[in-house]
Image (cartoon, rainbow, N blue to C red; front, side):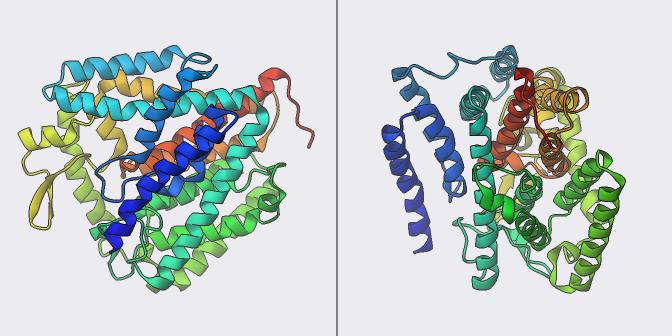
Length: 426
């Protein structure tokens, strides 16, 4: 019964998208907002298909009937460089067919980034609209989590259960299947709650409530890497703050730590069933295999989405046992190493140039033009994900890919506002 209900959700999402798009006055803006408004359900409950990809390809072809087809208004050489690297990597790959399927699956996020970035650069108010919807998603995700705590783990958006959620204490996955990905979602959006939005005063009024609830939720996920990322983001904010804010931040951190220790028996983050050393040793063995793969294919990698195929052919001990069947690793327990192995140096350099260029532009604007702390909050949100990405390939869930892409686009657009002479009076 549960599988049947969840199986209907994607079809309803498709239908709602068509209705929403056809009735919209601005199709490109409608496409972005739909992806964000329906963020929790643009997924596949059984991992067999991807709603976001289907929506994006439909919009791509639909856009040709408007005056703003995708890639017509805004395009950057970096995008074509990345696509060229991935195309060559797929073409030269030992598993060519699978790599080209992976490339087709990768293109929708390029479409999304192009459309979102253009709309944010075209109108500043759309930036705040996107931020409001991100806060709304955070509130919905927290509400879903607390319902899950009350109703049990059967209250979920996925057909199959993640085996890594029950230890001495439960790791709650929320709207995700993997609690580690949910933890990355919470830690990143914690900083977005601090951005005041003139278009939605209710979020500004309750922003600290939302922030506290997101941190509490993070402890319920048991995500250590995400918690470390949150701490790094807080330290980053404190570096640019006054001494008064630093002292308050330190005091707040101590209070949270003491309260968390008091309830440690009930929090999965302290009861994972394995020590940090054991967790590191297990992952390190997998990382070494990925580094060996990269060492053999350093320039263009083994081809996008080919990690599992490569493991099955050349590293037959790299698998999970799922219901008694071997499932070969499709990632090496690290997002960076997966990209390094699949994209090679050239492809990975292009992808992360997009990220680091946005951070550089934001810091340059902050130091040279205006001390706008919203830039620091956006960078901190990205930093929290970056630290978690080292031990979790979170892009396996398209929603995290959408989230991170959205944060980077917002940072770019926010920084470019000041190129127009925009001034904030504090």
